[in-house]
Length: 243
Image (cartoon, rainbow, N blue to C red; front, side, top):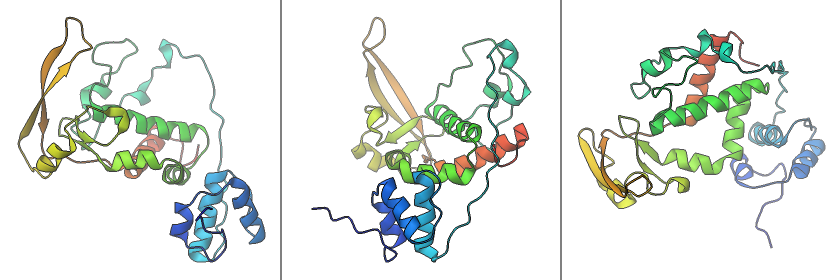
């Protein structure tokens, strides 16, 4: 027998968001309480959560959508908006982003963990813009649909060179130090920590290498990063808040 509460107007917002309801149940609740029934599950969930919290019906925003023009990707696709400066973040090298060309060079790949995460954040934002979503909708989808990713983000820590020093991400087993080691070093305000690891996937291996982590260590805030990247792209491509 399930302990899941019944979806009624007596349910608290926090408890509602912690439970799983079928889309049919969400639509039924909206219909019974005079809420709009349009939209996907994420929009229905956001609408009901607002109603349970305030007792008010949230107005549906009309989002101006623009279908992306699908064209062939050629050498001519490279243009000025791809070249930009990185402000206030030394773990994202200016040289990498201001000197991009249409030719591949060894400086093109994103080598650090921090750079690769930033690229994923930017891909999320660009995809949302191309689909005609708003920033608010992107963040709501992240909050509601990606609880595992949230737990990884909340406990993945980077050093000052952009290397992951500790993570609970199950797909990154062996990356960074162990939990026991992390508890010892996590509050360091300066200095370095070294770790000797063995690579057994390289030619003529296995090979031992020393990894250095530079303190202090901090984690990222994906929602804050979505906001900053969105504003940056909106200005760069002069497309406004909705795409």
